[in-house]
Length: 399
Ligand SMILES: *Cc1c(COP(=O)(O)O)cnc(C)c1O
Image 1 (cartoon, rainbow, N blue to C red):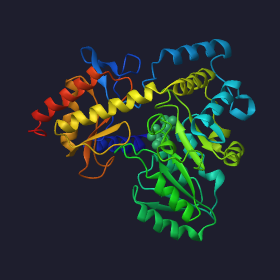
Image 2: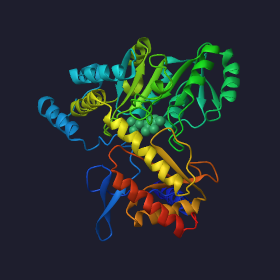
Image 3: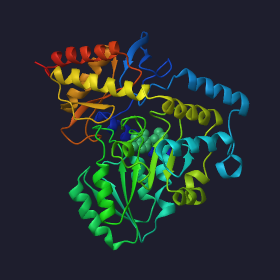
Image 4: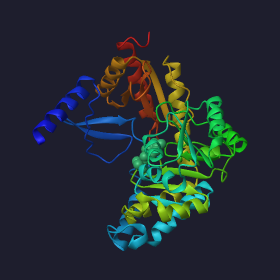
């Protein structure tokens, strides 16, 4: 049996390679940070990292590491259970409370990942009588979560409020409606127009769900996410997010919002009921993250300053930068091959970035995505811009 299937798999893999879409993993041999070493053919190579989701630079933070070590000594390595059987320690409850306080929400439920939070969100809450109205560029995990639910599906073009209004009108046929959107869209770095979404939700009697994965810790004056940015703290029914990006970069996800919604998820959400609890050490380090972020605003301020600095320098150098309201800076090159050549040349210069092209972004919209971090020093940012300019001239992107 396997022989035929093996041939089929080999042909599929070859097709992926021929299309230039085959993904190779680069092996890092240092902690995750703004300066890392990767394994090269002739030994370790130093690079400045511009492609991690390490927005607040907490992935190698000493206080988080200490909190994790201490908790592991006190409470052991793993929980060996799902939450409701015997997988809940006080640390989990404290972390859920800290997340609710951070977002100004009523209650929070933890998951092993935000992928699970989104995967387990819709199905327990909505039935075939209801409607989900989803932004066309939503994250894969929202799309999968919507697929697992029997509700009627509507889709609107990315951030297009006229289209959203049309879909909301059509969705009046259903009993309950929820609009689902990413807070920050990861390819352009644009923030969802939550003020207008909220207005339309009021007008058409809909609820709103926002995935704060790329926005929490980043967007808003004090980095409290899109609800801070739009002055809608406590007004949005459901938020989801990850502990794997700004909040320390480890693992874990959460859903936070109205208390009845969270309560029903605890009863019926399948990734919560049938998957292991996050380890106490991870919960403790995440808890420390929220303590750090409420102690002062230095990391969020540093991230905002770094993003402004980089975007200004790159724009002044003549690059075509997508307007960004987050820590994602898309350097537009438009041509797929050029984006790959550009990224490879930057790596030769010790600058670690990723080039994206169709189908990850629309046809003819190839780009390099730069992700800024509070961990970047000004010297690292300058070095990044300098390398971009050098390669830009070499490849004829800059005059
Ligand atoms: C990264 C991301 C996720 C997945 O988060 P994990 O905790 O890594 O599973 C979900 N939604 C969005 C919008 C993301 O960017």
